[in-house]
Image (tube, rainbow over all chains, first blue to last red):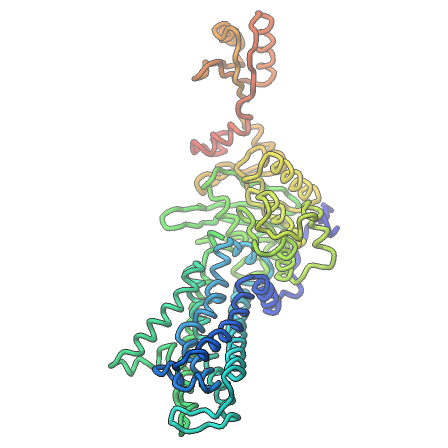
Length: 291
Length: 311
């Protein structure tokens, strides 16, 4: 038989194996393209710029500073303290939420739209798609953190000022050092945020439900903070994914201590690896009977 | 094993809990063939196609596509294969073109100009830059065919492509599938419409509750089909029954509501109608009920009869 393809004119008999298979790069480009097309992604990033500015303006305009929070006492007079005040607040639930909105959705939305069968019948393997989605989620988390940090620090310094900062041990930190420490403190959020991203990925894959994928990591984060605040469970605290969010405190003390930072790296990496491996196995073994 | 076969599925079993959705199915499709998998809803057609496309794993048996298996070749099993399961699904916030570009990316990238060609083929060129959330069901079905064609397939797997379409949509979709089939593509088409399969396919497997009820050529199926049936209403049904009694090849019975049900070979039924007119009995209505193939389909899928029993 000499039949030919309707469009290419090629013979239809043979079905040769592709010479070069699209790799992770193709999956990354596709996931990034989808993310960029979504209104929610743009809204999140715009919110990450505007909300901290609004918070800084509002707190700065208060007649009395929020003294009962870390660095709250100096926040109305000192831009660096303001940036650290916002950091402490963001670490409670904003950062987990910010990353979960994308990571908790990225797998479950394929179920929601019924598109697993569309993408899994192309030339890109399930594994490649998994890593593509995971890396894009992590990339977005880091981008959102970067935007939030930059907007917060810039707004704080520009609106409140860049006076010397009073550290946690009462020491005076000159503006040049203070800016470095504030940036470093925000940077310390990256690893636990990746941990929460991976947790959201796991819920997204496992639950196949966008709402669960987004809400579950935030709720778990709040529960962990509650558990961490309880007395008598000191041995458990280092393993909570919320504990690394507080590791930056050591940078602002005199003398500095970095033990919690190292513990935080291990804890965050542990959570990330366990969640990603579990999510990978769930997706690999799953029968796509619906979407 | 036959490496030349486009599809070589042998003794495939898939159970969900205690339900055997596919029960030792064997289907072989030669390259260039247009093959139908027919059965009522729940017969196991879609489950079989999902296994073929690697979306679910069979519990036992082997599924080879152009000689390749999922266990051995992984995603390469799908090289040269495209299609869609149930209704094709896309990202509603992207345009039709963006969806195709993205899917093309996952296939290694579509060559320049190819998307436009494909969009012309499926008659979506004018709406390609609209978001998919605004597409009608029929447009999504055609976009599904377009997404399949990007892969330059040698085997096209279509699961009930005309399902849910209005009559015009069904006509267009069938014409499109026929064009693709005529171009020499191997087509594996699942349907629960006998006429759709009869129109397009060379060979067919009829499934019933996960099992094969018939397997063979459409011509063979036609040969096994019972006589066609007609609904007849006359000015004098009692005399019409008596006239039928004179013709051994024709069977006429009273229909449950009113009128008569007539079955018999087409020639004999024609003679019967001529006799009625000659005897002064006027026909108020004379309409075919089910086509012979439809009748056979219902016999095979409703009653548990297998093709050897029909034969």
